[in-house]
Length: 99
Image 1 (spheres, rainbow, N blue to C red):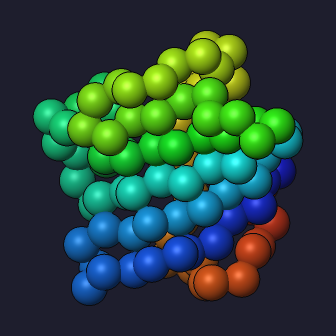
Image 2: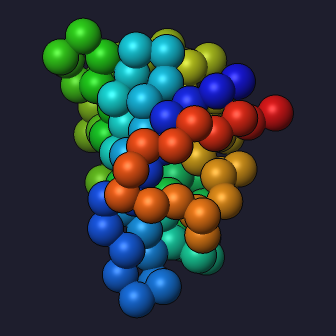
C-alpha cells in the first residue's frame, strides 16, 4: 500500500502532527512516541481527523466524535500510521510504502 505523508508540525520530539493522503482520504493525525489512555485503542494516536469528498468521516480527539467511515478503511489507516517512520518525514509530501 502506498500513501503520501508529510510532517505539519514537530514539537521538540514529544509528538508529531502529520498529514497523509491515501485512497481519496485526507488525514491529519497527532502522534506521540508512547501510548496513552487518550489514544485510539490506548495507542500513540491522540488526534485523528479523516475527510473524504470534502466531508469529515472520522474524528478522534481524545475520544471518538464522528465515525461514518468504513471500518476496514479506518483499521487500514490506523495500522498504516503506526508503521510510519516519522523521523524521516519532512514538510514536503513523500511516498511511503506500507506492507
